[in-house]
Image (cartoon, rainbow, N blue to C red):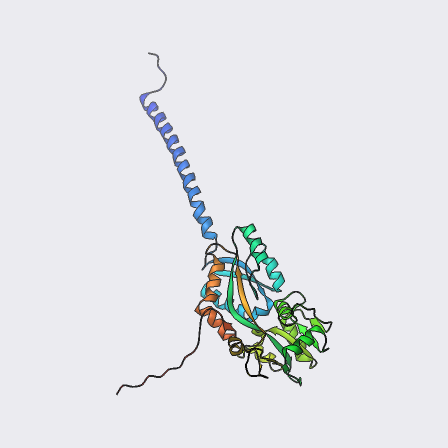
Length: 324
């Protein structure tokens, strides 16, 4: 038999090298499979959860003070969350909801049938929505204004332009305040030329604080919290107008917007505060919605002098008698 040039030892080394190469190939394949399997949980971990993550929401500007407080407490309680908020008009909030980047809006109405059908077709599900609290459109006047009583008929005359006093709104676009007054006071009619708009609610407050010949309309969240230092400063220059109660058996009863007059339906310009959530899994949007719906969030609405819609937070006093 011819000599192949390989000794027994060299043949063994070659076999070991081939085995090592095969082992390396198998090990490399296993590592690739392992890393591929590991990638999915890592990506899933980066998705937001009810207690962690980052989302965007849009909020009607008239609710800004109370939602700022909700976000402050929520972020303090869940430091791994980041809710980016845009304060804008109600109409813009609904436009934002159509984009993929906006997960939730907070406005003064829910979805109508046309909007529900649109999202059902686009997303294969309808966003959920519900009332969180009840707010009100406050009529504000200058501290030195002579007249502070308003019937609904007089408000209609002012907003339609029949009475020429200047009325100042909280935005130049379709805010919830503008829509509410048009629907509930004018019954679909048009505003008169005496109705003007500031950029936002703070602009309305500043305008009214400087002039005795105008009335303004803002969300109660901006002027109803008597413990808020900024609002205490506002109320040194303005005051709340009284509007005639249309549901009261007692005629001639006028009410200021407050938690009590909203709850007992004495103030006629009360309105709901809705969330609309575009989320069909338990993400951060669901977590924030749950926070506002449960005790802490409802207490924040109450402390801002709005009327909580979900939880009854009545305060009761009691006494304990010593047994004989």
